[in-house]
Each structure stands twice: as structure tokens, then as C-alpha cells.
Length: 82
Image (tube, rainbow, N blue to C red):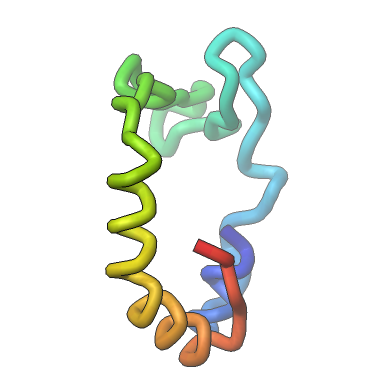
């Protein structure tokens, strides 16, 4: 998240202190929600299981998106190795 703010040239407003790791849910949640002041976690759709993708489909998609990903990496100066 911090990298995105820096990339966009924005002042750091959102930092690690705004999140806590919810052990029950298994992912980070907001420390407090605006207005209510209570912690906020995303609903049941967060962390849902993903469909199985065959290796063949994965390879086709990776090959198709490779030139677009490289162009993106070059634009931002970072390689995510997608």
C-alpha cells in the first residue's frame, strides 16, 4: 500500500498502523472504521477459495500477458515477476 502512495506521488496517509492482523479471519483489517470508531474487516467474500486453474491454462494466460506485463514493469521501474 505504501508503494502505491509513493508511486502516485501522494503524501503517506495510510500506514501499517491503520491495520491489524485478524487471526480469526486470517488477513489484515482496519484498526477502526470512520465514523463508528470500531474495527472493520471485510466480509465473508474476502479470502474465498479460488477455482483450480490447469497448468495449461495458466501457461496460455502467462504467455498472453507477458508483453503487457513487461511494458508495465518498464513504465514503473519494478518487476513483479507475474
